[in-house]
Image 1 (cartoon, rainbow, N blue to C red):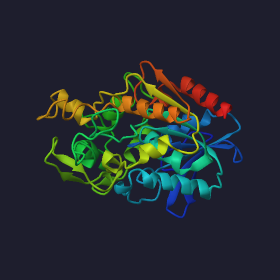
Image 2 (cartoon, rainbow, N blue to C red):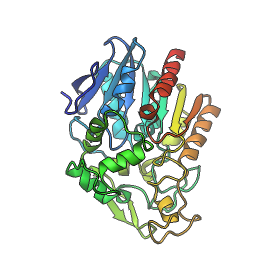
Image 3 (cartoon, one colour):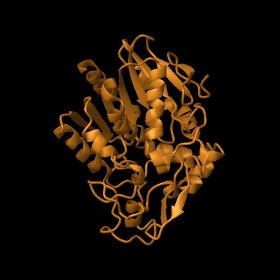
Image 4 (spheres, rainbow, N blue to C red):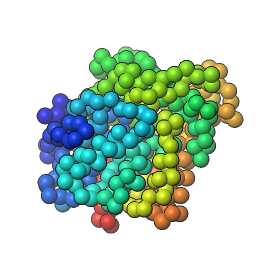
Length: 355
């Protein structure tokens, strides 16, 4: 079923839900306690296979390909709903599979999805593990821990900030390493994990990266011109625009004030260059480094303090009755569950056992 070869012990199914046909990977016993794994951008369910297989024996791992990724039915992502399409797809999948309650694990953009899923799911979420999650205030275009925008039109976020050559090479399935700035393999091996680490299933993970749908209505999505630096604002289609702070709305307040607050474990790499307070994928950082010209300065468009934003929101969550733990893995990049599987799996198993 899966277009990408899977490990022994992983099964693959297409699930017909009322919203769309969702491809998902499964591990463990069919009657096990469900753990729902949510992948990030430019990846797929394939990234979770080793983690799924390491679950305790009485747990059922479920890792869907999100819409726009992998083998799931191709459907547009309405960015004006923020990450809402992903949230409702996941809840519909849980309904279709008959999952009354479940644990959730999200990586990067998938972690951002969990900030919305927790208040939307009521008491269905048993626990949440955030692996290098994106900021609850979105990706790009904010200046402080409170998520205030750098510009009124949220310039510096959305589809226009994505490297066009990177997405062009994705669109043709490029698997080489000739372009040191934009080859998908080079980007993956430079930023997903900290060099010189290379995972055993490099080829399958690259295939997962390349499985994302590419185009102006997909990834990177559309964008609009802006009078504010860097000259582009968010459009209305695709995951990059769905991550724009323009479409966050009251989602942070809904997360902080959720009636049911599952325990949260936050795990990140100390050397993450994608989600960090000085992210090399943030135009404020690139402007300050002189890579993107015309930077208006730190008062106007500083590097987005992504990690500090996550921590500030989780502190609010805790002050409102929730609990969270932060674990920082040294010498690790953006994928702590791939780079340090033993440590990550121990934290996850410990959380599962406590709930």
